Amino acid sequence: MARFLRILLTVLLMSGLVGLTSEARADAPSVIRIGYPGVGIGNRPASFGNSIATLHLRGLLEDEFKKDGIKIQWTFLRGAGPAVNELFANGLLDFSHLGDLPSVVGRASALKYKVLGSSGVRGNIYVSVPADSAVKNLKELRGKKVAVQKGTSTHLAALKILESAGLSEKDVRLINMDTNTAKSAIVTKDIDAAFGQADYLALQDQGVARVIFTTKGGDAKLTSNGLFLGSDDFIHKYPEITKRVVKSYVLAAKWLADNEKEPLPIFQLWSKSGNPFAAFKRDWQGENIKYRNSPLVDAYVASRYKLQIEEAKRLGLTKKTFSFEEWVDSSFLNQALKELNLEGFWQPRDLAGNPTPGKS
Image (cartoon, rainbow, N blue to C red; front, side, top):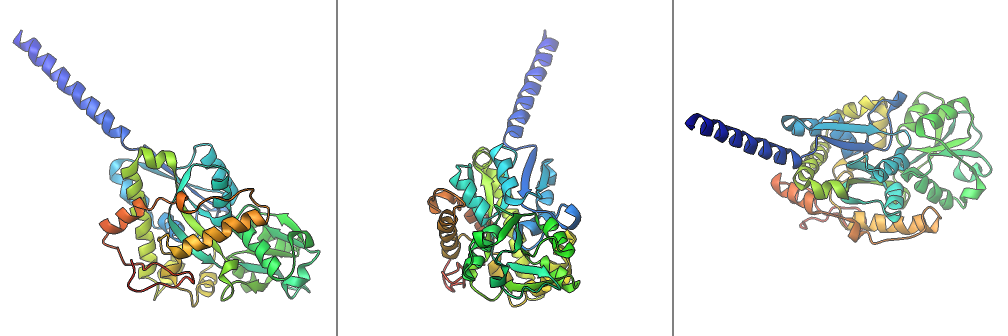
């Protein structure tokens, strides 16, 4: 009888332990799925230019969750922002970096994700033509074949850049092309021009393209922006895991800030995307790496997105507007900054994008 009771007690204890283990697993996912709107050269799964690309290249999430046995699954999408939104719509992503237009379109279409932080502001746009093209300025693009990846932040910027030259979308033959295809088309002269980012500088260095316009050093309203987004389902189901994800993302932004004065390690890291070091060096010359990659959703970010929400509707890229403030959940970022002792490391930016000393 005593032996039976000992066996029964052991079984009950083991059952309790199994139950506790199952419950603990329920508090954490087996995989964290992160989307990125773009690919590197040759479709390699890597990118550049912001805190989320840096988060990936430095393996910070993998290091953070290795001890938990949680897999980190990165998906780099040649279809860019629209493809990211499609995955979110089908419940296949938990987090993503996403440019301003696709995130605005997604939110206006009732996709259930929240803004957890900023992942880059004032991304420079470059307009390139074949090296021997007769086109010298934006106005001469009238009637020309011009490539841009539609539904992306570059698309919204392109329409506003054309407007700045007195042109509308109807004044050019706007062709939908992903970045790598458009760069090849510039080389083969199948298109007359293309809108893109810093990677187009490499074509100029190779002598096959020429930049006729850049937003660098110009009107910030014509540049692009990015956000770090988290799905409502994930952040509600796994708040502690979400906090740790956001902490890792903050550490990526901190690493960029720490290397701002001597950015060689940053450009070397981003070069893993296949894009050349020289292009990053030129694109970021004179730029404030720390504050362009600040994670804060401050007055500057809010003003930029309120503008983009209105501009997207005005240009017919979405049918309705919404409240930016109601889209943001800063609780995880605030917790992360506090736990990392980084409160005040990034000062909030004013409406001109400049840090405001003394405010936090």
